Length: 121
Image 1 (tube, rainbow, N blue to C red):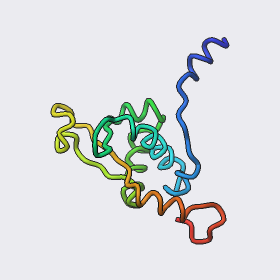
Image 2: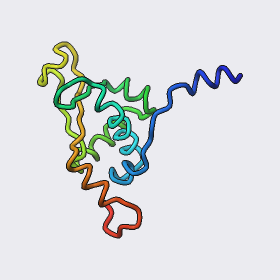
Image 3: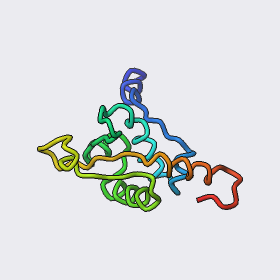
Image 4: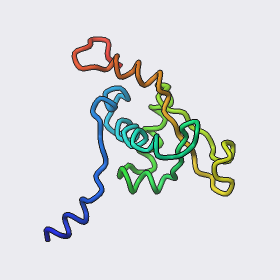
């Protein structure tokens, strides 16, 4: 039993409450937390990473609808950017979206969303 639990729980993901506060909710914060984790692992010089909806779901348990809602919130707040991977010439064969964090907007949102601030986003 213990071995099974260790196997099932072997790959936790980091969830940053500050990112959830900046994003305006847990699902958007979870998506942003996972993007934050991958942002320096993609190897693209402009910071783009790409994953399809199934990969996001395996990693975060966010359904496609939850992902879409989270992405809409994050784009609406200017916290992330999206592009088709073919336009970026990352993957000529897939139709996967690429994502990157808008660091300036994220910094401002994190500052504004600090606990105790009355004008938190």
